[in-house]
Amino acid sequence: MKDMNLFKYHPNDTFFHNRDPRANIIFALTISTLGFFIDPVFLILLIILVLILFFVSKIESQIPILAKYSVISGLMIILLNAYVRKEDLFFKFYFISLSKSGAFFGGIMALRLMVLIFVFSWFSSVTHPKKLISIFHKFPLLAFIMNTSIRFVPMIVEDYKRIRNAQMSRCLEFGGGGKKKIKNIIPIAIPLFVITIRRAMRIAEGIETRGFRLEGRTYYYNPKLDFFDVLMIIISFTVILATLGSFGCYS
Image (cartoon, rainbow, N blue to C red; front, side, top):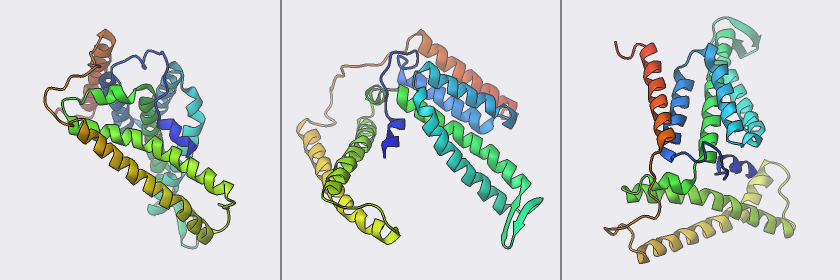
C-alpha cells in the first residue's frame, strides 16, 4: 500500500511542475503513443528519455520501485506469450512449452507496458490534482468525479493503514495460510467500508449545501497557457503526426 505514493503529486519547483496540466497531458499522451507505435529498436531510447524526465523533475527516487513492478509484470507477459505460441519451441516439459517468437513478442510488449507505467507515474507526480481538475471547470460533473476519485484513493490508503495498525495493536496477526489471511481481511474490510460510506455521505451533504452545479460560479485559479506550454503542445502534436505518417495512416 505504501507504493501508492508512486502515483501521488510530489510538489517541487521544476520545469514540468510549472507547466500547464494540458501541456503535460498532451506530452504524456505523445510518449504513450510512441510507446505503442515506435519500432522496437528505439524502445530503449524512449525508456531512457522517460528516465531523464524523472531526473529533470527530481522524482528519480521512484525509479527503483517502478522498475520492480515493471519487471514483475514484464516477466508475466513474456511467459504468457511464450506459452501461448506453439511454433519454434525452445523449451518443452510435459504440457509446458515455450516458443522463441512468443518470448520475443512478449519482451517487446513488456517494454511498451514499462513506458506506460513510467509515463503515468511521471505525469501524476508533476501535475497538481487541483490544476488538473481546473481545466474541466466547464464540465462540473466530470470535474467532481475526477476530484473525488483523486482524493478518495489516498484517503482510503491512509484509513487502511490506521485500521491495520489498530487491529495489530489488538494482537491480530496477518500471517499464516490462505484461509487465515482471508479471515483476517474481515476486521479491516468492514471498518474501511463503513468509513468510506460515511465519508461519501458527508461529501454529498456538503456539495448539496454549497449549491453544486449552480450557474454563475467563479474560479480562483484559471489555467492559462504560456510560451513553453504552447511549445510543448506543438512539439507533441508534431511527433504524433510524424509517427502516424510513418505508419502510412495518411495514405
